[in-house]
Length: 448
Picture (cartoon, rainbow, N blue to C red):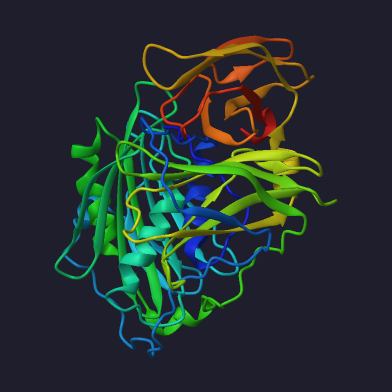
């Protein structure tokens, strides 16, 4: 089973530690990436966009200080241990759980996060179970918990194509459960994902249960038994450092949001589209734009953070970006934007840049707002994997009208090999398309 997740190489502060951990687990296990999709239709809204190049951290909810619980958390129900003969114990005894024989265990923890994944053997009956633990600095309140869950999910799914939330509920023990469906590596493969979020003061716990959609009914009881067998020894929680107010993202000197516009889709979602320009001398990765929706008094009503489409931003380059508010708050009158990034390291080796676009032409299709067809060619000397086509539409004044991306169905391009593509835009700001720009990026074969 392969997942098309967009992998990140470093954490982004509390609101995206879970993203980094879970995505890296899945990416390292499956080595895949994906892209967002834009819903149809658009109408311009009136509020003015204010852009600033100041790089600031996206702040997590401030936790209410509370002493750690002094007794281990028992399982929520009795697990079926007859199917779980193996026991895993964290090296520092923070938690233990039971898992099936033959499964692969991988510890992907970092300095500020405990992350362990369990993967079923083979591809015939794929399944993955992920334990992700971070420390928000104290007990989360009833209002802070949903906010942190929403932030986690927004970041996790912002680059997942065709993701659909199926269920969202709260269990009797306070666990927030979110069930979703996503697309796997092949066009016909559907994946079933269940997230279980819980406050285990002083830790924020995320469990992720994944299998193929077809095998979910059979696999879910097994994954649930693994979840039920989990026991935390919370006096050991001090091994996970508490989140600080400062972001671990470097100040992104020379980065600014330009040519931006915004529109409301027929679904009610609010879109900000634009480009991030690098006017400095540093090459960046993990470039992100944070958008704050403010009311007339300056109160921050809602905040979203999304990454730019291209994984690397070299001096003098621009990268398109789209930020989506699925349910924008009523009464917002102003946008404030911030750009953050980290100096490039991992993606300098991971990204394969030698992809050339040719014969790209655009027009209005029978469905959607715009369509671009063309050819992508591997013009380099290495094999390219997971080619992503990224398109930007502009009006005659140079404002961005829409941003869209897609992955080629053909997952490998050998040197000199070409493949056709068709990129359809399902939403854009008002205005005529004066020109478009298409770029492509891929992954090097040795990072598959």
